[in-house]
Amino acid sequence: MKPVIAIVGCGRVGTALAKFLSEAGYGISGLASKSFSSAKRLADLTGAGRFTTIPWEITKKADIVFLTTPDSEISDTCSNIAFNEGFKRDSVVLHCSGALPSTILSSAKSCGAFIGSMHPMQSFALNEGNESPFHGIIFAVEGDAQALHIAVKIAVDLGADCISINTEDKTLYHAAAVVASNYLVTLLSLAFRLIEHAGISGSDTWKVLKPLIKGTLLNIEKAGIPAALTGPVARGDIKTVERHIKAIGEKSPELLDLYNTLGFHTIGIAESKGTLSKKSADILKKITNRKDRKDSA
Ligand SMILES: NC(=O)c1ccc[n+]([C@@H]2O[C@H](COP(=O)([O-])OP(=O)(O)OC[C@H]3O[C@@H](n4cnc5c(N)ncnc54)[C@H](OP(=O)(O)O)[C@@H]3O)[C@@H](O)[C@H]2O)c1
Figure 1: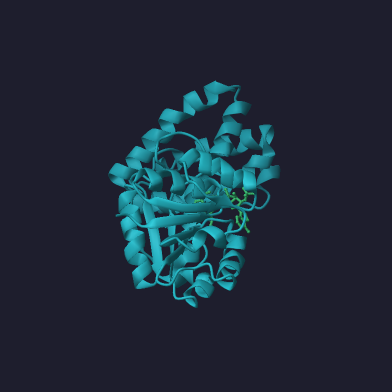
Figure 2: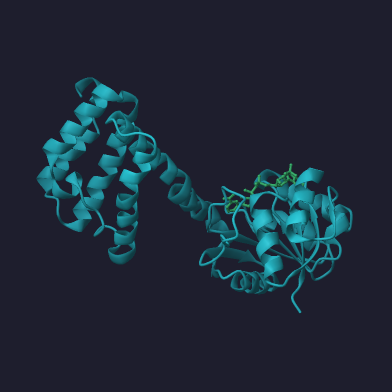
């Protein structure tokens, strides 16, 4: 029989865990959230009988407790549950933060629970759909051996995989996640704004860029970095880069800094690909790293 879980924090990640773990056969001892309405919404979605705003009412009977509040609330929430004797001895208490270590759950450990963190490398922006966001993803896990053992089982039951991470390396691991997801959004926002300045707008923007974005991701998957790099910097096409800088400086000067910074950091990748001469690399470094670039464009 599968263990019984409790979810504290019925937001995006808590909702996905409750939904897909209950589909995988886990029992739910109950759901708790800051607001009654969030807990009730998730109870309606999963068929869980108990929902509350008082976490220790539902964590006491759980074999596994997920603390899926915002990062800033995890430690205090855990301490409150521990203070109210809400953790079962030998239960496993997990949080899903990428940036914080499992040791922030030390109050649960004092109650005889095993603690760990399991961070899903996924973006949970939307709370809809029946497709599992966990399928094929990686959870980075760290903490007590007993907690890790359970975390691996949970990951497998969700159709995911696990890698272990050193507690002290979590911050950099999380920074990588932020770049790959959040800053990808920022990067694509730059592309969207430039193409809109070129007169392509509305749904056409995505239609035009999507095959290029997908093709690039596929090339990275197949050939890796730097082989996947194409375009003017990789070719050492200085004239084209200069024309870009001039056009952006005229039409959308506020975007020039980011364009130049990305160009500057692309030069090193092109050099490791071996398609850029030292001479062209030096010129490109100069034109993308000029402090007066906005004026000179
Ligand atoms: N979102 C992602 O893409 C993502 C990806 C990987 C990992 N994570 C991690 O997953 C965890 C949860 O993130 P999330 O994005 O799911 O957050 P979220 O959508 O903001 O949900 C957090 C939930 O916790 C509830 N809550 C707030 N304070 C609480 C408290 N003191 N006690 C009980 N419940 C409380 C909120 O309240 P209400 O009851 O008012 O709704 C909300 O429903 C975080 O550690 C985050 O770092 C998130």
